[in-house]
Amino acid sequence: MPNPKLAAIAAVLVVSILVLLIDNDEREHAIKDERLHVIEWLSATRAKLEAAINMPVSVTRALAVVYAAHSDLPEDEFIVLAAQAKISSPGIIDIALFSDTVISHVYPLEGNENLIGVDFRNVPAQWQAFQEMMATQQPQVAGPLRLVERTGGEGVVVRVPVYRAGQFIGAIGTPILLDSLLRESGLPDMEQTLHVAIRGRDGKGSSGEVFYGDPQVFAMNPILQKVSLPGGEWEIAAYPRSGWGAVSQTTYVIRLLGIAIGLLAASWAYGLVRHLQLRAENEQRLRESEARLRLHDSALNVAASAIVITDREARIIWANQAFTILTGYEFDEAVGRHCGELVKSGLQDRRFYEEMWQTILLGQVWHGDLVNRRKDGTLYHDEMTITPVTGSNGEITHFVAMKHDISARKAGEEHLRNLAFYDPLTQLPNRRLLIDRLGQTLAASKRSGRYGALMFLDLDNFKPLNDEHGHDVGDMLLMETARRILNCVREEDTAARFGGDEFVVMLKELDADSTVSATQANGVAEKIRVALAKPYRLELLQTEDDKTAIEYFCTCSIGVVLFVNNECSEEDVLKQADIAMYRAKAAGGNTIHFHDPGRM
Image (cartoon, rainbow, N blue to C red; front, side, top):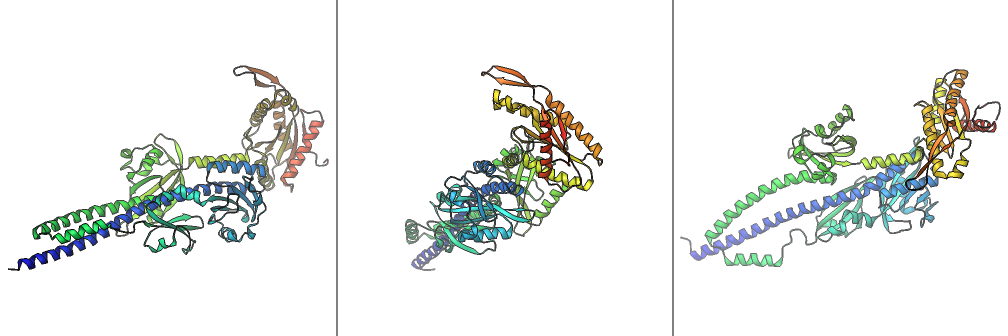
Protein backbone atom coordinates (compact mmCIF):
# COMPACT_ATOMS: atom_id res chain seq x y z
CA MET A 1 0.00 0.00 0.00
CA PRO A 2 1.18 3.46 -0.62
CA ASN A 3 2.81 5.24 2.25
CA PRO A 4 0.19 7.35 4.06
CA LYS A 5 2.57 10.28 4.28
CA LEU A 6 3.34 10.02 0.60
CA ALA A 7 -0.37 9.65 -0.17
CA ALA A 8 -1.14 12.70 1.96
CA ILE A 9 1.63 14.65 0.25
CA ALA A 10 0.36 13.47 -3.14
CA ALA A 11 -3.21 14.44 -2.23
CA VAL A 12 -2.06 17.90 -1.11
CA LEU A 13 -0.06 18.30 -4.32
CA VAL A 14 -3.01 17.19 -6.46
CA VAL A 15 -5.39 19.50 -4.60
CA SER A 16 -2.92 22.38 -4.90
CA ILE A 17 -2.55 21.84 -8.65
CA LEU A 18 -6.31 21.57 -9.12
CA VAL A 19 -6.90 24.73 -7.06
CA LEU A 20 -4.46 26.61 -9.26
CA LEU A 21 -6.11 25.28 -12.42
CA ILE A 22 -9.58 26.13 -11.12
CA ASP A 23 -8.40 29.60 -10.10
CA ASN A 24 -7.08 30.24 -13.60
CA ASP A 25 -10.28 28.91 -15.17
CA GLU A 26 -12.48 31.06 -12.94
CA ARG A 27 -10.34 34.09 -13.75
CA GLU A 28 -10.90 33.51 -17.48
CA HIS A 29 -14.67 33.27 -16.90
CA ALA A 30 -14.53 36.45 -14.80
CA ILE A 31 -12.76 38.24 -17.66
CA LYS A 32 -15.45 37.03 -20.11
CA ASP A 33 -18.19 38.35 -17.82
CA GLU A 34 -16.36 41.66 -17.42
CA ARG A 35 -16.01 42.03 -21.20
CA LEU A 36 -19.73 41.31 -21.70
CA HIS A 37 -20.64 43.98 -19.14
CA VAL A 38 -18.26 46.50 -20.72
CA ILE A 39 -19.83 45.72 -24.14
CA GLU A 40 -23.29 46.52 -22.72
CA TRP A 41 -22.16 49.81 -21.12
CA LEU A 42 -20.17 50.90 -24.17
CA SER A 43 -22.96 49.98 -26.62
CA ALA A 44 -25.47 52.11 -24.70
CA THR A 45 -23.01 55.04 -24.56
CA ARG A 46 -22.26 54.74 -28.28
CA ALA A 47 -25.98 54.72 -29.12
CA LYS A 48 -26.58 57.84 -27.01
CA LEU A 49 -23.60 59.61 -28.63
CA GLU A 50 -24.88 58.79 -32.13
CA ALA A 51 -28.35 60.03 -31.18
CA ALA A 52 -26.87 63.27 -29.76
CA ILE A 53 -25.07 63.90 -33.08
CA ASN A 54 -27.89 62.74 -35.41
CA MET A 55 -30.40 65.32 -34.13
CA PRO A 56 -28.24 68.33 -35.23
CA VAL A 57 -27.52 66.47 -38.50
CA SER A 58 -31.29 66.14 -39.18
CA VAL A 59 -31.86 69.83 -38.36
CA THR A 60 -28.95 70.88 -40.62
CA ARG A 61 -30.33 68.72 -43.47
CA ALA A 62 -33.74 70.42 -43.18
CA LEU A 63 -32.17 73.89 -43.40
CA ALA A 64 -30.05 72.75 -46.37
CA VAL A 65 -33.24 71.72 -48.23
CA VAL A 66 -34.66 75.25 -47.82
CA TYR A 67 -31.36 76.85 -48.84
CA ALA A 68 -31.12 74.63 -51.95
CA ALA A 69 -34.56 75.81 -53.06
CA HIS A 70 -33.79 79.48 -52.29
CA SER A 71 -30.15 80.41 -52.59
CA ASP A 72 -31.13 84.09 -52.20
CA LEU A 73 -32.47 83.52 -48.70
CA PRO A 74 -32.75 86.98 -46.99
CA GLU A 75 -31.21 87.59 -43.58
CA ASP A 76 -34.55 88.01 -41.78
CA GLU A 77 -35.97 84.77 -43.18
CA PHE A 78 -32.75 82.92 -42.30
CA ILE A 79 -33.05 84.18 -38.71
CA VAL A 80 -36.64 82.85 -38.45
CA LEU A 81 -35.70 79.43 -39.85
CA ALA A 82 -32.49 79.16 -37.81
CA ALA A 83 -34.29 80.13 -34.59
CA GLN A 84 -36.91 77.41 -35.16
CA ALA A 85 -34.19 74.86 -35.92
CA LYS A 86 -32.11 75.80 -32.86
CA ILE A 87 -35.15 75.38 -30.59
CA SER A 88 -35.67 71.83 -31.91
CA SER A 89 -32.01 70.96 -31.16
CA PRO A 90 -30.73 72.95 -28.11
CA GLY A 91 -27.26 71.36 -28.34
CA ILE A 92 -26.43 73.53 -31.35
CA ILE A 93 -24.21 76.53 -30.51
CA ASP A 94 -25.08 78.52 -33.61
CA ILE A 95 -26.05 78.01 -37.27
CA ALA A 96 -24.00 79.39 -40.17
CA LEU A 97 -24.97 79.70 -43.83
CA PHE A 98 -22.12 79.55 -46.36
CA SER A 99 -22.34 81.23 -49.73
CA ASP A 100 -19.79 79.14 -51.60
CA THR A 101 -16.98 78.92 -48.96
CA VAL A 102 -17.74 82.22 -47.20
CA ILE A 103 -19.96 82.62 -44.11
CA SER A 104 -22.77 85.01 -45.10
CA HIS A 105 -25.34 84.46 -42.30
CA VAL A 106 -24.93 83.43 -38.64
CA TYR A 107 -27.58 82.88 -35.99
CA PRO A 108 -27.36 84.10 -33.31
CA LEU A 109 -25.36 87.05 -34.64
CA GLU A 110 -24.58 88.59 -31.26
CA GLY A 111 -21.03 87.65 -30.26
CA ASN A 112 -20.42 86.02 -33.68
CA GLU A 113 -20.08 89.18 -35.78
CA ASN A 114 -16.47 88.31 -36.56
CA LEU A 115 -17.61 85.17 -38.40
CA ILE A 116 -19.42 87.08 -41.14
CA GLY A 117 -17.23 87.10 -44.26
CA VAL A 118 -14.85 84.39 -43.03
CA ASP A 119 -13.63 82.38 -46.03
CA PHE A 120 -12.84 78.79 -44.97
CA ARG A 121 -10.14 78.62 -47.60
CA ASN A 122 -8.22 80.81 -45.15
CA VAL A 123 -8.93 78.57 -42.12
CA PRO A 124 -6.35 75.74 -42.40
CA ALA A 125 -7.69 73.84 -39.40
CA GLN A 126 -11.11 73.35 -41.06
CA TRP A 127 -10.49 73.77 -44.80
CA GLN A 128 -9.55 70.12 -45.39
CA ALA A 129 -12.84 68.89 -43.86
CA PHE A 130 -14.73 71.52 -45.91
CA GLN A 131 -13.00 70.26 -49.10
CA GLU A 132 -13.92 66.65 -48.28
CA MET A 133 -17.57 67.68 -47.90
CA MET A 134 -17.47 69.40 -51.32
CA ALA A 135 -15.68 66.45 -52.95
CA THR A 136 -18.02 63.74 -51.59
CA GLN A 137 -21.17 65.90 -51.90
CA GLN A 138 -22.25 64.34 -48.61
CA PRO A 139 -22.80 65.73 -45.09
CA GLN A 140 -19.66 65.79 -42.95
CA VAL A 141 -19.09 65.78 -39.20
CA ALA A 142 -15.73 67.49 -38.67
CA GLY A 143 -13.76 67.49 -35.47
CA PRO A 144 -13.12 67.69 -32.73
CA LEU A 145 -11.43 70.99 -33.60
CA ARG A 146 -10.84 74.43 -32.10
CA LEU A 147 -13.97 76.52 -32.68
CA VAL A 148 -13.74 80.09 -33.97
CA GLU A 149 -17.20 80.95 -32.57
CA ARG A 150 -17.74 83.19 -29.59
CA THR A 151 -17.90 80.16 -27.25
CA GLY A 152 -14.45 78.85 -28.22
CA GLY A 153 -13.27 75.45 -26.98
CA GLU A 154 -13.26 72.05 -28.70
CA GLY A 155 -16.28 71.28 -30.82
CA VAL A 156 -17.82 69.09 -33.49
CA VAL A 157 -19.11 70.80 -36.63
CA VAL A 158 -21.94 69.34 -38.73
CA ARG A 159 -21.85 70.61 -42.32
CA VAL A 160 -24.31 69.76 -45.12
CA PRO A 161 -23.38 70.79 -48.69
CA VAL A 162 -26.02 72.53 -50.78
CA TYR A 163 -26.31 71.97 -54.51
CA ARG A 164 -28.63 73.55 -57.02
CA ALA A 165 -28.90 72.27 -60.59
CA GLY A 166 -25.83 70.12 -59.88
CA GLN A 167 -23.70 73.10 -58.83
CA PHE A 168 -22.24 73.64 -55.35
CA ILE A 169 -23.67 76.92 -53.98
CA GLY A 170 -22.72 76.71 -50.32
CA ALA A 171 -23.39 74.81 -47.09
CA ILE A 172 -25.12 74.90 -43.72
CA GLY A 173 -22.85 74.49 -40.65
CA THR A 174 -23.85 73.81 -37.04
CA PRO A 175 -21.11 73.58 -34.35
CA ILE A 176 -21.74 71.64 -31.12
CA LEU A 177 -19.46 71.70 -28.06
CA LEU A 178 -17.69 68.36 -27.64
CA ASP A 179 -18.14 68.45 -23.85
CA SER A 180 -21.91 68.83 -24.34
CA LEU A 181 -22.06 65.75 -26.62
CA LEU A 182 -20.02 63.66 -24.19
CA ARG A 183 -22.19 64.68 -21.22
CA GLU A 184 -25.35 63.86 -23.17
CA SER A 185 -23.99 60.38 -23.92
CA GLY A 186 -23.25 59.76 -20.20
CA LEU A 187 -19.57 59.08 -20.86
CA PRO A 188 -18.25 61.01 -17.80
CA ASP A 189 -20.43 58.83 -15.53
CA MET A 190 -19.08 55.66 -17.15
CA GLU A 191 -15.50 56.75 -16.37
CA GLN A 192 -16.09 56.14 -12.67
CA THR A 193 -15.56 52.42 -13.33
CA LEU A 194 -13.85 52.33 -16.75
CA HIS A 195 -10.83 53.80 -18.49
CA VAL A 196 -12.21 55.36 -21.71
CA ALA A 197 -10.54 56.90 -24.78
CA ILE A 198 -11.86 58.07 -28.18
CA ARG A 199 -10.03 58.50 -31.45
CA GLY A 200 -11.10 59.44 -34.96
CA ARG A 201 -11.17 57.17 -38.01
CA ASP A 202 -11.47 58.32 -41.60
CA GLY A 203 -13.78 56.81 -44.22
CA LYS A 204 -10.99 54.37 -45.25
CA GLY A 205 -10.65 52.89 -41.76
CA SER A 206 -7.34 54.54 -40.84
CA SER A 207 -6.97 55.46 -37.17
CA GLY A 208 -6.58 59.11 -36.25
CA GLU A 209 -5.40 60.91 -33.14
CA VAL A 210 -6.84 60.23 -29.68
CA PHE A 211 -8.85 63.33 -28.73
CA TYR A 212 -10.33 62.07 -25.46
CA GLY A 213 -8.73 60.03 -22.68
CA ASP A 214 -5.32 58.33 -22.46
CA PRO A 215 -3.98 56.87 -25.77
CA GLN A 216 -2.63 53.90 -23.74
CA VAL A 217 -6.23 52.66 -23.34
CA PHE A 218 -6.08 51.34 -26.94
CA ALA A 219 -3.06 49.17 -25.97
CA MET A 220 -4.82 47.46 -23.00
CA ASN A 221 -6.89 44.92 -24.99
CA PRO A 222 -9.99 47.14 -24.63
CA ILE A 223 -13.55 46.70 -25.88
CA LEU A 224 -13.97 48.75 -29.07
CA GLN A 225 -17.13 50.35 -30.45
CA LYS A 226 -17.44 52.37 -33.66
CA VAL A 227 -19.54 55.56 -33.71
CA SER A 228 -20.90 56.08 -37.23
CA LEU A 229 -20.73 59.69 -38.44
CA PRO A 230 -21.43 61.30 -41.81
CA GLY A 231 -18.06 61.32 -43.57
CA GLY A 232 -16.23 59.08 -41.10
CA GLU A 233 -16.42 57.48 -37.68
CA TRP A 234 -15.05 57.56 -34.16
CA GLU A 235 -13.74 54.58 -32.20
CA ILE A 236 -14.38 54.27 -28.45
CA ALA A 237 -12.16 52.02 -26.33
CA ALA A 238 -12.79 51.01 -22.70
CA TYR A 239 -11.56 48.60 -20.05
CA PRO A 240 -12.10 48.30 -16.25
CA ARG A 241 -10.10 50.64 -14.01
CA SER A 242 -9.06 47.62 -11.94
CA GLY A 243 -7.85 45.78 -15.06
CA TRP A 244 -9.17 42.58 -16.60
CA GLY A 245 -9.80 39.83 -14.04
CA ALA A 246 -8.12 41.65 -11.16
CA VAL A 247 -8.14 39.69 -7.90
CA SER A 248 -7.68 41.22 -4.43
CA GLN A 249 -4.81 40.31 -2.09
CA THR A 250 -7.28 38.86 0.42
CA THR A 251 -8.55 36.37 -2.19
CA TYR A 252 -5.01 35.19 -2.85
CA VAL A 253 -4.38 34.69 0.90
CA ILE A 254 -7.59 32.68 1.31
CA ARG A 255 -6.71 30.45 -1.63
CA LEU A 256 -3.17 29.89 -0.37
CA LEU A 257 -4.49 29.00 3.11
CA GLY A 258 -6.98 26.60 1.50
CA ILE A 259 -4.15 24.87 -0.32
CA ALA A 260 -1.99 24.77 2.86
CA ILE A 261 -4.72 23.15 4.94
CA GLY A 262 -4.64 20.18 2.62
CA LEU A 263 -8.03 18.82 1.90
CA LEU A 264 -8.64 15.22 2.71
CA ALA A 265 -8.85 12.95 -0.30
CA ALA A 266 -12.58 12.27 0.16
CA SER A 267 -13.41 15.94 0.62
CA TRP A 268 -11.23 16.79 -2.33
CA ALA A 269 -12.98 14.15 -4.52
CA TYR A 270 -16.41 15.33 -3.44
CA GLY A 271 -15.50 18.99 -3.97
CA LEU A 272 -13.98 18.27 -7.38
CA VAL A 273 -17.04 16.33 -8.62
CA ARG A 274 -19.38 19.01 -7.29
CA HIS A 275 -17.28 21.74 -8.87
CA LEU A 276 -17.35 19.95 -12.26
CA GLN A 277 -21.12 19.67 -12.00
CA LEU A 278 -21.50 23.36 -11.16
CA ARG A 279 -19.05 24.28 -13.89
CA ALA A 280 -21.09 22.35 -16.49
CA GLU A 281 -24.28 24.11 -15.37
CA ASN A 282 -22.56 27.49 -15.40
CA GLU A 283 -21.18 26.88 -18.89
CA GLN A 284 -24.67 25.96 -20.15
CA ARG A 285 -26.14 29.10 -18.63
CA LEU A 286 -23.24 31.09 -20.09
CA ARG A 287 -23.88 29.70 -23.60
CA GLU A 288 -27.58 30.57 -23.31
CA SER A 289 -26.71 34.01 -21.95
CA GLU A 290 -24.26 34.61 -24.82
CA ALA A 291 -26.95 33.67 -27.37
CA ARG A 292 -29.42 36.14 -25.83
CA LEU A 293 -26.66 38.74 -25.60
CA ARG A 294 -25.93 38.46 -29.34
CA LEU A 295 -29.57 39.33 -30.05
CA HIS A 296 -29.72 42.16 -27.50
CA ASP A 297 -26.35 43.56 -28.55
CA SER A 298 -27.47 43.68 -32.20
CA ALA A 299 -30.50 45.72 -31.13
CA LEU A 300 -28.32 48.10 -29.09
CA ASN A 301 -26.00 48.53 -32.06
CA VAL A 302 -28.97 49.93 -34.01
CA ALA A 303 -30.40 52.29 -31.38
CA ALA A 304 -31.91 52.37 -27.91
CA SER A 305 -35.49 53.14 -29.02
CA ALA A 306 -38.35 50.77 -29.83
CA ILE A 307 -36.78 47.33 -30.43
CA VAL A 308 -38.47 44.24 -31.84
CA ILE A 309 -36.87 40.83 -32.55
CA THR A 310 -38.46 38.48 -35.09
CA ASP A 311 -37.71 35.06 -36.49
CA ARG A 312 -36.70 34.60 -40.13
CA GLU A 313 -40.39 34.81 -41.23
CA ALA A 314 -40.86 38.20 -39.45
CA ARG A 315 -42.94 36.71 -36.60
CA ILE A 316 -42.33 38.65 -33.38
CA ILE A 317 -40.56 36.78 -30.57
CA TRP A 318 -39.57 39.76 -28.37
CA ALA A 319 -40.32 43.47 -28.11
CA ASN A 320 -39.43 46.11 -25.54
CA GLN A 321 -41.69 48.53 -23.70
CA ALA A 322 -40.87 51.33 -26.14
CA PHE A 323 -42.42 49.20 -28.91
CA THR A 324 -45.64 49.00 -26.90
CA ILE A 325 -45.65 52.78 -26.38
CA LEU A 326 -44.99 53.39 -30.08
CA THR A 327 -47.52 50.93 -31.58
CA GLY A 328 -50.08 50.44 -28.78
CA TYR A 329 -49.63 46.63 -28.79
CA GLU A 330 -48.81 44.93 -25.49
CA PHE A 331 -46.06 42.31 -25.45
CA ASP A 332 -48.54 39.39 -25.20
CA GLU A 333 -50.54 40.78 -28.15
CA ALA A 334 -47.46 41.12 -30.36
CA VAL A 335 -45.61 37.84 -29.72
CA GLY A 336 -46.18 35.26 -32.45
CA ARG A 337 -47.77 37.71 -34.90
CA HIS A 338 -46.32 38.89 -38.18
CA CYS A 339 -44.97 42.47 -38.15
CA GLY A 340 -46.88 43.41 -41.29
CA GLU A 341 -50.12 42.18 -39.73
CA LEU A 342 -49.70 44.62 -36.81
CA VAL A 343 -48.37 47.90 -38.22
CA LYS A 344 -48.57 47.84 -42.02
CA SER A 345 -50.41 50.95 -43.27
CA GLY A 346 -50.75 50.08 -46.96
CA LEU A 347 -49.11 53.37 -47.99
CA GLN A 348 -45.94 51.64 -49.26
CA ASP A 349 -46.21 49.67 -52.50
CA ARG A 350 -45.22 46.07 -53.09
CA ARG A 351 -41.88 47.04 -54.69
CA PHE A 352 -40.87 48.88 -51.49
CA TYR A 353 -41.18 45.71 -49.40
CA GLU A 354 -39.57 43.51 -52.07
CA GLU A 355 -36.45 45.69 -52.06
CA MET A 356 -36.38 45.70 -48.24
CA TRP A 357 -36.58 41.86 -48.04
CA GLN A 358 -33.99 41.48 -50.80
CA THR A 359 -31.56 43.56 -48.73
CA ILE A 360 -31.98 41.81 -45.36
CA LEU A 361 -32.06 38.28 -46.80
CA LEU A 362 -28.61 39.00 -48.28
CA GLY A 363 -27.45 39.63 -44.71
CA GLN A 364 -27.24 43.41 -45.13
CA VAL A 365 -28.61 46.09 -42.81
CA TRP A 366 -31.67 47.94 -44.18
CA HIS A 367 -32.50 51.50 -43.12
CA GLY A 368 -35.39 53.64 -44.32
CA ASP A 369 -38.45 55.76 -43.52
CA LEU A 370 -42.01 54.55 -43.92
CA VAL A 371 -45.52 55.26 -42.67
CA ASN A 372 -46.95 52.68 -40.24
CA ARG A 373 -50.23 52.32 -38.34
CA ARG A 374 -50.76 52.06 -34.58
CA LYS A 375 -53.25 49.78 -32.89
CA ASP A 376 -55.77 52.64 -32.65
CA GLY A 377 -55.52 53.23 -36.41
CA THR A 378 -53.49 56.45 -36.30
CA LEU A 379 -50.54 56.80 -38.69
CA TYR A 380 -46.99 57.76 -37.80
CA HIS A 381 -43.69 58.25 -39.65
CA ASP A 382 -41.36 55.40 -38.72
CA GLU A 383 -37.57 55.53 -39.14
CA MET A 384 -36.58 51.86 -39.04
CA THR A 385 -33.34 49.91 -39.19
CA ILE A 386 -33.40 46.11 -39.63
CA THR A 387 -30.28 44.08 -38.77
CA PRO A 388 -30.03 40.36 -39.71
CA VAL A 389 -28.65 38.04 -37.00
CA THR A 390 -26.81 34.89 -38.07
CA GLY A 391 -26.22 31.62 -36.26
CA SER A 392 -22.99 29.70 -35.84
CA ASN A 393 -23.39 28.25 -39.35
CA GLY A 394 -23.67 31.70 -40.91
CA GLU A 395 -27.37 31.38 -41.80
CA ILE A 396 -29.84 34.13 -40.87
CA THR A 397 -31.92 33.12 -37.85
CA HIS A 398 -33.48 36.36 -36.61
CA PHE A 399 -34.01 40.00 -37.46
CA VAL A 400 -33.59 42.91 -35.02
CA ALA A 401 -35.53 46.07 -35.89
CA MET A 402 -35.16 49.50 -34.29
CA LYS A 403 -38.23 51.70 -34.76
CA HIS A 404 -38.31 55.42 -34.03
CA ASP A 405 -41.29 57.77 -34.34
CA ILE A 406 -40.10 60.73 -36.46
CA SER A 407 -43.55 62.29 -36.92
CA ALA A 408 -42.49 65.38 -34.94
CA ARG A 409 -39.40 65.79 -37.12
CA LYS A 410 -41.45 65.45 -40.29
CA ALA A 411 -43.94 68.00 -38.95
CA GLY A 412 -41.06 70.35 -38.13
CA GLU A 413 -39.68 70.01 -41.66
CA GLU A 414 -43.15 70.73 -43.07
CA HIS A 415 -43.44 73.75 -40.73
CA LEU A 416 -40.12 75.11 -41.99
CA ARG A 417 -41.25 74.60 -45.58
CA ASN A 418 -44.49 76.49 -44.87
CA LEU A 419 -42.53 79.37 -43.32
CA ALA A 420 -40.45 79.58 -46.49
CA PHE A 421 -43.26 79.31 -49.08
CA TYR A 422 -46.58 80.40 -47.53
CA ASP A 423 -47.99 83.61 -46.09
CA PRO A 424 -48.57 83.03 -42.34
CA LEU A 425 -51.74 85.17 -42.20
CA THR A 426 -53.76 83.94 -45.20
CA GLN A 427 -51.95 80.61 -45.79
CA LEU A 428 -51.74 81.56 -49.48
CA PRO A 429 -48.49 81.03 -51.42
CA ASN A 430 -46.05 83.90 -50.87
CA ARG A 431 -44.00 85.81 -53.45
CA ARG A 432 -41.26 83.17 -53.56
CA LEU A 433 -43.59 80.25 -54.29
CA LEU A 434 -45.62 82.33 -56.78
CA ILE A 435 -42.50 83.21 -58.81
CA ASP A 436 -41.47 79.54 -58.84
CA ARG A 437 -44.90 78.45 -60.12
CA LEU A 438 -44.99 81.33 -62.61
CA GLY A 439 -41.70 80.14 -64.09
CA GLN A 440 -43.13 76.64 -64.53
CA THR A 441 -46.33 78.02 -66.09
CA LEU A 442 -44.37 80.21 -68.54
CA ALA A 443 -42.41 77.15 -69.68
CA ALA A 444 -45.57 75.03 -70.00
CA SER A 445 -47.35 77.80 -71.96
CA LYS A 446 -44.42 78.02 -74.37
CA ARG A 447 -44.58 74.27 -75.00
CA SER A 448 -48.37 74.00 -75.38
CA GLY A 449 -49.06 77.31 -77.18
CA ARG A 450 -51.96 77.99 -74.80
CA TYR A 451 -52.27 81.33 -73.05
CA GLY A 452 -51.90 81.98 -69.36
CA ALA A 453 -52.89 85.09 -67.43
CA LEU A 454 -51.54 86.95 -64.40
CA MET A 455 -53.69 89.33 -62.35
CA PHE A 456 -52.33 91.90 -59.90
CA LEU A 457 -54.95 92.96 -57.30
CA ASP A 458 -54.74 95.91 -54.92
CA LEU A 459 -57.45 96.84 -52.40
CA ASP A 460 -58.70 100.39 -53.06
CA ASN A 461 -59.58 101.60 -49.59
CA PHE A 462 -57.85 99.26 -47.15
CA LYS A 463 -55.69 101.81 -45.32
CA PRO A 464 -58.62 103.74 -43.69
CA LEU A 465 -59.78 100.50 -42.07
CA ASN A 466 -56.35 99.93 -40.51
CA ASP A 467 -56.09 103.54 -39.38
CA GLU A 468 -59.51 103.58 -37.74
CA HIS A 469 -59.80 100.08 -36.23
CA GLY A 470 -56.23 98.76 -36.05
CA HIS A 471 -54.26 95.99 -37.75
CA ASP A 472 -56.16 93.11 -36.10
CA VAL A 473 -59.34 94.13 -37.93
CA GLY A 474 -57.32 94.73 -41.10
CA ASP A 475 -55.97 91.19 -40.84
CA MET A 476 -59.56 89.88 -40.60
CA LEU A 477 -60.43 91.62 -43.86
CA LEU A 478 -57.29 90.26 -45.59
CA MET A 479 -58.14 86.69 -44.52
CA GLU A 480 -61.72 87.08 -45.84
CA THR A 481 -60.35 88.59 -49.07
CA ALA A 482 -58.09 85.54 -49.56
CA ARG A 483 -61.07 83.20 -48.99
CA ARG A 484 -63.21 85.04 -51.56
CA ILE A 485 -60.43 85.01 -54.16
CA LEU A 486 -59.93 81.25 -53.72
CA ASN A 487 -63.65 80.69 -54.31
CA CYS A 488 -63.35 82.44 -57.70
CA VAL A 489 -60.48 80.41 -59.22
CA ARG A 490 -59.91 76.81 -60.25
CA GLU A 491 -57.98 74.32 -58.16
CA GLU A 492 -55.12 74.26 -60.69
CA ASP A 493 -54.75 78.06 -60.61
CA THR A 494 -52.68 79.93 -58.02
CA ALA A 495 -53.82 82.70 -55.68
CA ALA A 496 -50.98 84.32 -53.71
CA ARG A 497 -50.51 87.18 -51.27
CA PHE A 498 -47.79 89.49 -52.54
CA GLY A 499 -47.56 91.59 -49.39
CA GLY A 500 -49.66 94.21 -47.59
CA ASP A 501 -53.04 94.44 -49.36
CA GLU A 502 -51.71 93.15 -52.72
CA PHE A 503 -52.75 89.77 -54.13
CA VAL A 504 -51.79 87.94 -57.34
CA VAL A 505 -53.85 85.38 -59.27
CA MET A 506 -52.28 83.18 -61.97
CA LEU A 507 -54.50 81.30 -64.48
CA LYS A 508 -53.02 78.30 -66.27
CA GLU A 509 -53.84 76.63 -69.60
CA LEU A 510 -56.43 79.01 -71.05
CA ASP A 511 -57.09 78.89 -74.82
CA ALA A 512 -54.75 78.95 -77.80
CA ASP A 513 -56.67 81.96 -79.15
CA SER A 514 -55.82 85.33 -77.58
CA THR A 515 -59.39 86.72 -77.84
CA VAL A 516 -60.91 83.67 -76.18
CA SER A 517 -58.21 83.68 -73.49
CA ALA A 518 -58.77 87.39 -72.81
CA THR A 519 -62.50 86.72 -72.43
CA GLN A 520 -61.82 83.86 -70.01
CA ALA A 521 -59.38 85.95 -67.97
CA ASN A 522 -61.76 88.91 -67.91
CA GLY A 523 -64.55 86.64 -66.67
CA VAL A 524 -62.46 85.45 -63.72
CA ALA A 525 -61.28 88.99 -62.97
CA GLU A 526 -64.86 90.30 -63.01
CA LYS A 527 -65.95 87.47 -60.73
CA ILE A 528 -63.20 88.43 -58.26
CA ARG A 529 -64.00 92.16 -58.53
CA VAL A 530 -67.69 91.55 -57.77
CA ALA A 531 -66.86 89.16 -54.89
CA LEU A 532 -64.47 91.62 -53.24
CA ALA A 533 -66.90 94.55 -53.66
CA LYS A 534 -69.48 92.88 -51.44
CA PRO A 535 -69.62 94.25 -47.87
CA TYR A 536 -67.39 92.72 -45.19
CA ARG A 537 -68.84 91.97 -41.77
CA LEU A 538 -66.01 92.34 -39.23
CA GLU A 539 -66.24 91.86 -35.46
CA LEU A 540 -64.55 94.34 -33.14
CA LEU A 541 -63.66 93.00 -29.66
CA GLN A 542 -64.58 95.74 -27.16
CA THR A 543 -64.24 93.90 -23.83
CA GLU A 544 -63.64 90.31 -22.80
CA ASP A 545 -67.17 89.17 -23.80
CA ASP A 546 -68.42 92.18 -25.80
CA LYS A 547 -68.16 92.18 -29.58
CA THR A 548 -69.33 94.82 -32.06
CA ALA A 549 -69.77 93.99 -35.73
CA ILE A 550 -69.08 96.59 -38.41
CA GLU A 551 -69.89 96.51 -42.10
CA TYR A 552 -67.08 97.67 -44.35
CA PHE A 553 -66.88 98.14 -48.12
CA CYS A 554 -63.56 97.57 -49.84
CA THR A 555 -63.24 97.35 -53.63
CA CYS A 556 -60.17 96.42 -55.65
CA SER A 557 -58.24 97.44 -58.76
CA ILE A 558 -57.15 94.59 -61.04
CA GLY A 559 -54.39 94.60 -63.66
CA VAL A 560 -54.29 91.67 -66.12
CA VAL A 561 -51.58 90.49 -68.50
CA LEU A 562 -51.78 87.57 -70.95
CA PHE A 563 -48.68 85.56 -71.85
CA VAL A 564 -47.88 82.80 -74.34
CA ASN A 565 -44.78 81.53 -76.15
CA ASN A 566 -42.73 84.59 -75.16
CA GLU A 567 -39.31 85.19 -73.71
CA CYS A 568 -40.44 87.39 -70.80
CA SER A 569 -39.05 86.60 -67.38
CA GLU A 570 -41.20 86.13 -64.30
CA GLU A 571 -40.30 89.63 -63.09
CA ASP A 572 -41.28 91.11 -66.51
CA VAL A 573 -44.74 89.53 -66.37
CA LEU A 574 -45.26 90.74 -62.78
CA LYS A 575 -44.15 94.25 -63.75
CA GLN A 576 -46.61 94.34 -66.69
CA ALA A 577 -49.50 93.23 -64.46
CA ASP A 578 -48.47 95.79 -61.84
CA ILE A 579 -48.51 98.60 -64.43
CA ALA A 580 -51.96 97.51 -65.62
CA MET A 581 -53.19 97.50 -62.00
CA TYR A 582 -51.98 101.07 -61.43
CA ARG A 583 -53.82 102.18 -64.56
CA ALA A 584 -56.99 100.56 -63.22
CA LYS A 585 -56.47 102.38 -59.94
CA ALA A 586 -55.82 105.66 -61.82
CA ALA A 587 -59.14 105.15 -63.60
CA GLY A 588 -60.93 105.41 -60.26
CA GLY A 589 -60.51 101.92 -58.84
CA ASN A 590 -62.99 99.05 -58.66
CA THR A 591 -62.19 98.22 -62.26
CA ILE A 592 -60.16 95.90 -64.48
CA HIS A 593 -57.41 96.96 -66.87
CA PHE A 594 -55.56 94.70 -69.33
CA HIS A 595 -51.89 95.33 -70.12
CA ASP A 596 -51.35 96.96 -73.52
CA PRO A 597 -47.97 95.84 -74.97
CA GLY A 598 -47.81 99.10 -76.90
CA ARG A 599 -47.91 101.19 -73.70
CA MET A 600 -45.39 100.84 -70.87
